Image (tube, rainbow, N blue to C red):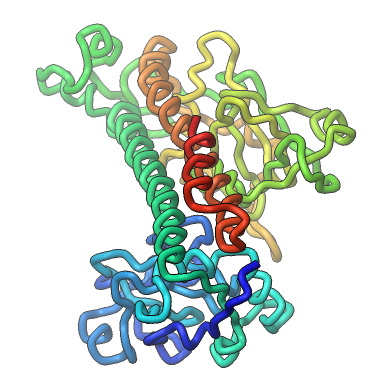
Length: 439
């Protein structure tokens, strides 16, 4: 390990906070980024917020605002989580976090960002935060935090190397978000808004499809007990359109250093799997914990308790088992149209149905899993299901490939960073290792 260390506060030119209390908020204006928007594996903050501030509040209430290149630092809840502030800055920050501004005369900003995420600094934060229920790293302890310092040339090399990998991972995730939005928009057009049917009703050719696909849509709507639907389409229970619905175990196995992945609710983002933080299950326990069902490619995993209505497709090459509060839907082997059903489950109509059947408990909300197979789903002709499935499958193939590449790059980034900081690995060796990871 490098023998030179710097006091965290000595490396900063500014610390921006907002008084440690909640500012006035509303339903429109500039987004207010809260601690849940800061993910340790993301480069930039996520816009997972429904709170906004007015122009007047932005100008008069805050002590200061983040600038591009600042580092967002969580003080309470998940102390030490960091994100980079993008350019332009189109948000303001809520309580329980600060924006720290590196002094470029003393430390390369991207190097400081990388080291704040390193194990050597994160372990210091873990040892210093207070609170049992809600961990809290006091701003008054910032001067106790020590940062390992390399020479200025090495700082630039390490900082740029780390940041470059983080940007590439971020781009892959942004691409996936766009691809998924395309698939969801297509499903909504065909099977929620019924745009091709309405086009035919008006004497127009449906847009964005060939004649063979257009011919699969009827030219009228009819009223059913469950609402308006294209003529001839039906509503069937989930149990009649899939092979089965299977529950996972109701306990948690011992954690192993390697082996299959034990999926938990934290691994579901809402419409996909996030394998950034995973729990392994050992081979000796594998048969026991997959006795009910072993997920396979194309299965649809979903949450039925606590965090409800999250669904995800099982990607290729993932050996996994289900954790507590998770179940899966297995499409039919022949003409199962798994991507069609997945998109129906995440679409607004089915999400409203889940909300209707939610049992609100004293501690957690849930749906009765035994009743899930009886829920009614819109069932167009199989040929049309398969037409959509073919398009969506191609999109999800690209998404899963991007996910796999992002995971490899993240592993490379996190493996090489401590070695670069300690001097065990030089930058040319790290670049070569990164290229080997990418193969």
